[in-house]
Image (cartoon, rainbow, N blue to C red; front, top):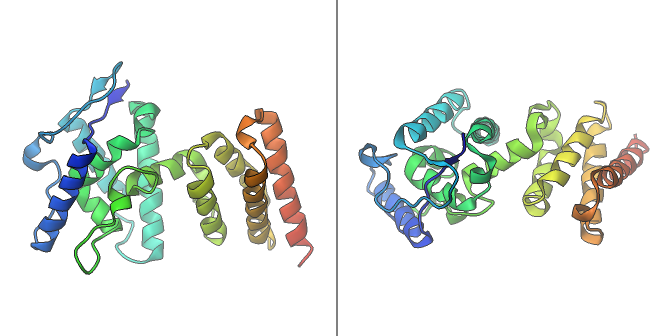
Length: 249
């Protein structure tokens, strides 16, 4: 079933984020789904689906809380576990509720600020002045939950690769900077990485391949290629990266 997710107007999103910051400065805990109701300024934009109700939003909260129960609270490893756990839940969730809704950046401020504020704060808390990072709470590809969703949906089980920490920064950087809007190419890159056998040279081979792809994206329009042609170009990038790096060992 396709569902329509609630949104804030942008000015309301800024106001609600400021209100959340003031609540935290006062030493008070955030109130997800305050009074058990949709926000008075809730908007539903779209057609051909069923507007999401409070029980469905509570079910999403519950699924995320359960997934995060063993993620830990601090440190880089905890942050990575948070992102992976959240992304997997959201990727599965919107498989049922509609990818079209998840691809709309305007639903994420509502979820982040009003439905999941405590979870967002756990990942990106306030600075010393009490300000929350705007780009993690408002609309855009750096929103804490949209970012995790995209990575999980694009990269899939590659996020469970035991070698991922060795090349994660390069891969995530490429996806975030260059491929957040081109999921087809990003998925092809993920498939290519999965095809590289484990071994001493894998980390540098993957990193070399990612750098080659990044260069290729600057000089070629991969998005205009057929699947077959794009896969061939990506394979050549990684084949060159593996050979160059393998020769150094």
